[in-house]
Length: 206
Image (tube, rainbow, N blue to C red; front, side):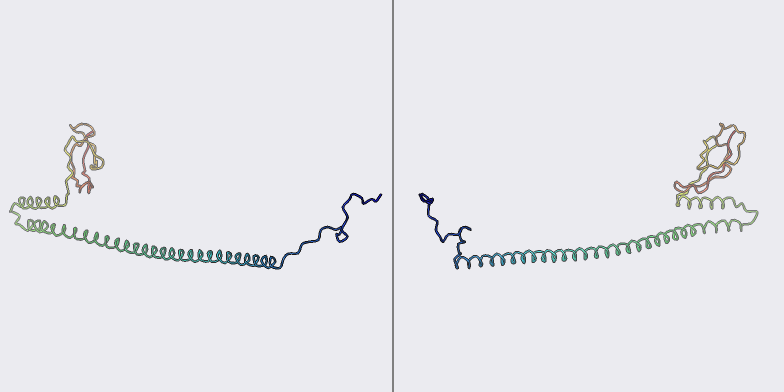
């Protein structure tokens, strides 16, 4: 009995190594090459597009940086001008203050000149003439000048409490006044506004 009975005959053209590879048609191969080329071209276009986008972004950032640099430069220039204006303002303010102080002093001295003239005329009077009325008039005139300058006299009354800011204690004396109060005013003081120009000299009761 033949060993091949019942089996499919083997084609002598078939190889034991396997089925031979099918050939790709020429048209299909050409289409595959074209697709690959298109893919490469699209990749290149995409890369070029991204590069162009990055270049545009860099250009935009550079323009923004230039604008900001110009703004910073303008702000610095404005700051320098403001500083210069402020320094000039300080100089002008100081000059005006000095001028006002000079005018105030000049005005005060001008008014005191008349007081001095009156005192001088009083001393030129004959010794037999009573100069007291003239001196009193001159004193009143001087007090008017002090009033105009907001100058007040510090002259406490005996028995008043001692104010260390406005009174200068010269002596402690026996007195009928309560202890540690003003006994007598030795020399009046003066204050201008809230500033003490000269404290009053007083004696204090023990």
